[in-house]
Length: 245
View 1 (cartoon, rainbow, N blue to C red):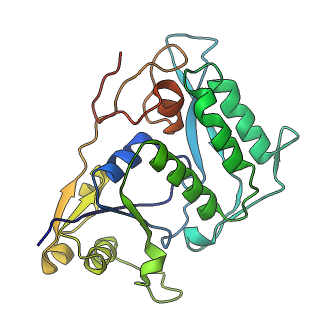
View 2 (cartoon, helix red, strand yellow):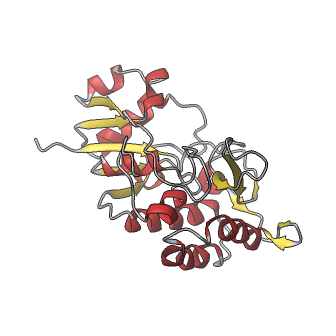
């Protein structure tokens, strides 16, 4: 039987590099759009670098986000507050201003900002649709060939299904996709049980991700920014543990 590695992740907003590292190590990457939306997670926000005017020895970051009408159910139902304003600007105009202000002097800004501006200027109503446009843009820009599938399209959960077992849900996804291996994030060590995977003869592996280091646009280095930080600064997806001088 040919090896088939499946991994899964929630559709985060402007995801960090580890998201794409896991994708690059998989044959199929499943977007978990059928799980509950959690406020103050990364579903509608992420971080970018900003200049540390007060203390150059303490690099700083800033949250940027898409305003949503917080749903009480699945991520796929999250709606964007289209007319929300920040500092007298529509939210997407303010967000683009924040990105431009922080990254305009980076080496690859002019290469990629126009497409990001286009994505955020399309006035999306649905958070999932916006996040998938960002994810697919970064996937293509990072030259990843992994197949992406929405979990909701697999129709594995009954309508209005609220209670679930994470391990069984993931094993069901693996079974539906004929996986031989499930690649979990490192955090899976804390909640996954192997029995559901053993029953379908699927091996479980855990991502061993070491955040790369590269020259950012401001003094010092902060890991775990949105992947656009690496995109603007070095123009590629750095490897796990890579140090780019």
